[in-house]
Length: 387
Ligand SMILES: C[S@@+](CC[C@H](N)C(=O)[O-])C[C@H]1O[C@@H](n2cnc3c(N)ncnc32)[C@H](O)[C@@H]1O
Image (tube, rainbow, N blue to C red; front, side):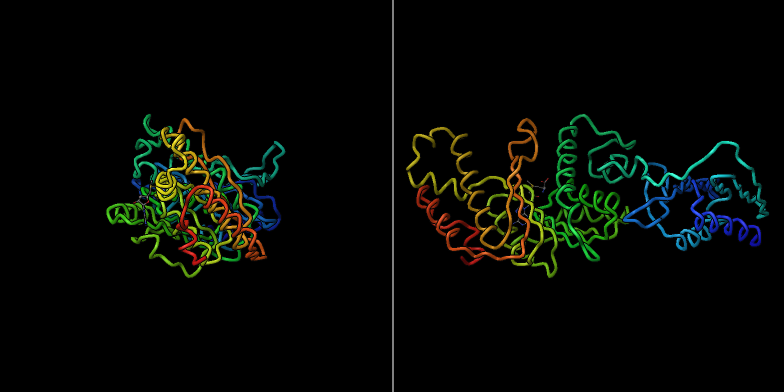
C-alpha cells in the first residue's frame, strides 16, 4: 500500500513541479457519515506564488485553503487512506487514479488523455464571492435557512452586509500588511458585519487576522463566541467590554458601525490613540449634538421638524469628527453606505492615516467656528482626545 501511495504522490509532486497539474479530487470517504464529502484541488497563482487551493466540500458548506507543494503532499498523506480511498490526479496529458480497497490494497491506473488540457490558475467562483450564505454561521446567526438560503425577512440585512463587504474590500485591498492584521469591530452587536469581514479577509484576501468584536452585551458575546467555536474560526473572537474600556495594544483597522451616539467617538478616539491605519465608522443617533443644538434655541425654525434637526445634527457631528481625524493626520472621506430605503443610518466616515500628523491650528479654528455657529459647547470626541 505505502509503496503505491508513494508512487502516486511522486506523480503529484512531479506534476506540481512541472506545472502540469490541472486538478485533483479526493473522494470516497472512509467514514460513511463523514461531514467532509470530498476535496477538490486546483493550482492557483496568489501574489505571484504558485499554490494549491483545496476546496473542502462539507455537507453544508465549502471551505478553501491554500497550500504550497510541500504542504499539499503532507495534506495528501494525512488524507489518504485515513479519510479518503480514491484520488484522481488530472494532468495536462494523463489521468492518474489511485484506488484503495476497503481491505487497504492500493492500485494505480493511468490513462493518457486525448484532448488538449491546460492549467487554469484563476480562483474558482467560491473564492470570488464576498460573502457566502452557505457558510453555516449565517444559519446560526439567523440569516439563512439550514440549506443556506437567505430568509425573506433577512434579504435587506444581507444586502447591507454585502454592500459593506464590497466597500471594506475596496478600502483594505490596497493596504499592505506585515503578518497578522489586527482589527477591532467596536459595538459589534449580533456579529453580522464582523463575520462578513472575517470571511472577506480570510477566504477572499487570504490574510491572517486577529479580529475582535467588542460588545457590551454579555448575552451576545457568549452566543457569538459559541458560533465561532463551533466553526473553529481562528483569529475571530468577541470580547465583552465597553468601547471606552477597550484599549487594544495593536490595531491596524478600526471598524465601528452604528455604535450609538458618543460610542462612535470613543471608538474613533481609541483608533487614533492606537495609530490605526484605517478607521471606518457608520455613526448613528447623533444625540449629543442634537440636544445641544436644540438647547441653543437658534434653530427653532428647523427643530420644529424632527427630520431636519436630525439631518443637521448628523452633518455637524460628523463634519467635526472628520475635522478631528484630519487634525490627527487622517485623510478623510464620507461616503454612502447603502441606499436610504434599507437604513437611514447610511453615512460611512473613513479615515486613512497619512505619514504626517498635521495638528494644524487652522483645523481647530474651523471646529471652533462650527461649534459657535451651532451653539455647541464641546464635541465629545474633542474631550475623548483631550483637545
Ligand atoms: C446598533 S448595534 C450595531 C451592531 C453592528 N455593528 C451592526 O452595524 O450591525 C450597536 C451595538 O453596539 C453596542 N454598544 C453600544 N454602546 C456600546 C459601548 N459603549 N460599548 C460597547 N458596545 C456598545 C450595543 O450593545 C449594540 O449591540
